[in-house]
Image 1 (cartoon, rainbow, N blue to C red):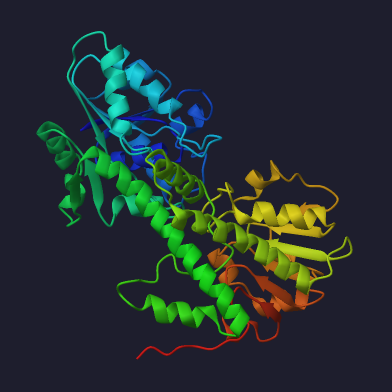
Image 2 (image 1 turned 45 degrees about the vertical axis):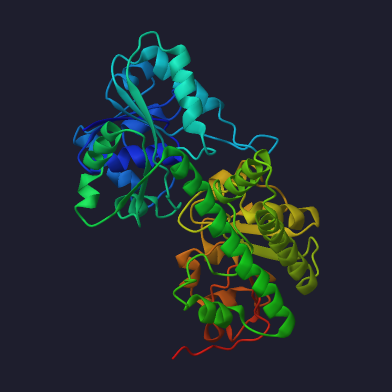
Length: 442
């Protein structure tokens, strides 16, 4: 099939590349020339495992192209995925100005039937606004459908999530639109992956409700972690005992310094606002936000209670990205934590496998902030090592070498990546881990 993808950000780029990988011919359109030449060469502006290889392969095989000519993009195919940004506005609502702009341009340029598909995360009933906009601006009575096909891509595993999804959620109104989706996703459904067909409004709601539930689950285990720390129990064993219940599960169930990134913080706020707009008070999600923010505050207090922070203290930070396998620092806990430590005069030595370049835009290298390209170089003569991201290379680090390089062997672990046997030679502090034990599951 021929497919048009509008937007070459995180969602748009992964969507375009993966649909091409499934054998389709894809034209991905972006508004500006920024990064366009690199994209045409298969060079990704974001770090996402496996993405650049797929880009290059499908460009070489002439299945994937990039353009800034929006009119050409609209008329390249009958299937148009809208993957533009829906940033958070000052009120907490999703800013839909880019969605409205694309809808207007579709109306003014379409030359025949189009299936316009929301891939961006949008409030429930946005599809109605898209329909109204197209009806208002179209020059001819050209037939079209609006559908919702929300993405459930985790940064750091987005390619795998697209190619091997738990399910595919599709919101349609017509049989024609449904048949197009069945053909579009045939390579995946033939592998046994299920398409859940619902109304467009239900699909829009499923996306916000799913992300908000996962954020709530993270805040829940962090709340339990606070209690564990007070009563002297290891949150690791408690989470294992709870998560082994199949009704609950162990995904998104690791205590730490809270969630960040471009999705959960924005989507929770937007969902709260959706509730307010319909006369509902989503107190549970407000508590989720409060707990998440408090996680950072609690961790900073922990650091300050453990260390005498001043300009003579060499504090090493491993991990700047909001999670492993990405260079994304949006809403990353590291932003708040490093800002506070820097304001208190700490001598900070920072390392991240991918996110340092993005981080330097907000925290340039200075007398009190130094960036390193090697994690072991960073810990030389360190008075403490603080871990803020659960990169695999940190879990596999040579801790004997780390101890030998440090001036004082203190680890403050915001992601609980180490077990008791790993850190027996360190003064170690985790989150919700005043005492180590293990709940044996029979």
